[in-house]
Image (cartoon, rainbow, N blue to C red):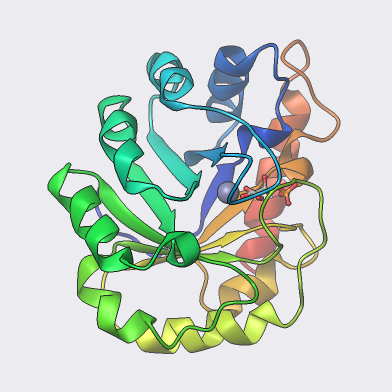
Length: 228
Ligand code: DX5
Ligand code: ZN
């Protein structure tokens, strides 16, 4: 995974057909997705339950590119090894997941995965400068995590700008997660984002038997993100 700040589109399979995940991953990649985003929810840190490491391992052969695993799990440290073994390229943990975030970030690095730090809408970013040497990606939650299909919280734009300024020339991706649409993609990229996660706006209108709309949606999002 070489670093580039060009826009990357990462469909979240939270909006995919739950009876057909392998085919959905292959379909979005064939239709132009750059990364595949997997939302792991524990029913405790967030009020919803989704997938575990066995599911990620089962999906690995169906994803040619980057498997971007977002862990909405607390405590998280005891699961990092299993998700790394499942083949995650990026493991993202929440700043709010426990009192020792730095330890979690170091553990991910030691497992050989790229290190992501996710930040909830209600959390400040004053801890970020002391973590910049330990991360490859910041995931800005632009909705409260737990569910797809929510509206992006406009106040998060200022947070993205502030994080982009903090990151400076460092090779750290800024990923946006929640409520990304064709309508806000350009503003997000202008504010400093380079990875756009999108569930509902990519999977809408398509299915495993009719994946062409995924391609239309991905191209529309990319074109909007790049200024239209
Ligand atoms: C929210 C998840 C997101 C979500 C995005 O907890 O982390 O990845 O699935 O879905 P949309 O694009 O529908 O907001
Ligand atoms: Zn996510």
